[in-house]
Picture (cartoon, helix red, strand yellow):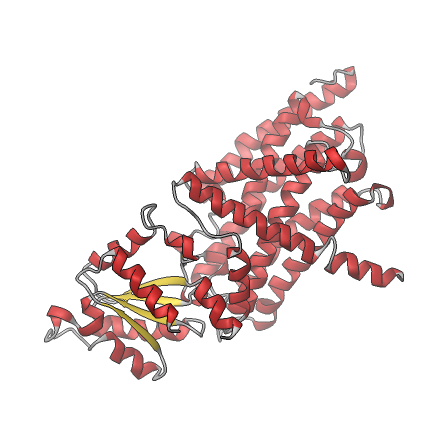
Length: 314
Length: 143
């Protein structure tokens, strides 16, 4: 296979769009099913997320007259393509660790911000007051969680001796140290906010904003957003597994261990989702800047001390 | 059967429109989502925006104030969509039949807006959650 053709294959079929989407739909079914079981319900059947997306594809696309049409249509495509890139990058690191470039952790952090930016763009372009409030809240939320999350990832880079490649970071397990564990907690909460799950679903707030940022989207464009969210549900826990929990193998016991780590992160996210009420935007900002920021800063200090004096458990 | 209709029947997302109800039918609709009845088994989900909805659950008699909003919400709903009239009031205006504030039965208001609107009726004052689920299942099976 020629190289451009192979890149397209990686991006669209395996391990990019189609493969990640299948796992993502299964993961979003797990989210709904576990939520239902927590609430003592039966929950939807396995094919439910897939049917939802098929149905949305067949529906009419309504675009508000006052909306900025180009941005309104482009925003979900931008978000989805950045998620395709991110998931391809992460899976390629797992499949072929020797073929990657140095500094991909920085590229991955940038790609992880893109879905939120696309959401802000799309909802601002949709000329709806509810979506505008949602966009404002999403913007504040992004400013809130980015700082502690990047600090938490700096802890990992210090703990692994200044490695900037995800494949070499995957060889370490920083979570088995005090600073690494604190950083893992902070980035788990930041992932919760990135996924838009319940304590931090302030931007989507079904009950007060009527699904906020996504309010004016319908039909196939809404399906694109749903596909993007399903892929986020794979890529973000996978990123945490690579950063903190020692990565994902491709053979035998290592593969099962990797799947186990992924499911543990996913179930932690679901349990946080189901046991917390939604916070206000000012509470979320205070939580991320004051508490999570402080914990991240302490973790960075501990990691620096640990690496200076060669104490591996610090 | 086309794939559009099949997938619509497997995952009908509903939007709840109150056009002047006494709140009894609204409570019974919310009842359907509780663990005892759990309509998420059938893929039914309550959504916050009519643009995401496949079915409108209309309760209430259709007052003159609310009729304008009902037409607006129906226009905003992405087609194909189904309208369910829940309770005696939207089905035939009930005891408010001669009221000064009543614009008319809800199905008439909707037929003015779109003559081809798909409308299903679930009578009762209020209908039990079992009746609502049974009505929705019957309506979807003839779609």
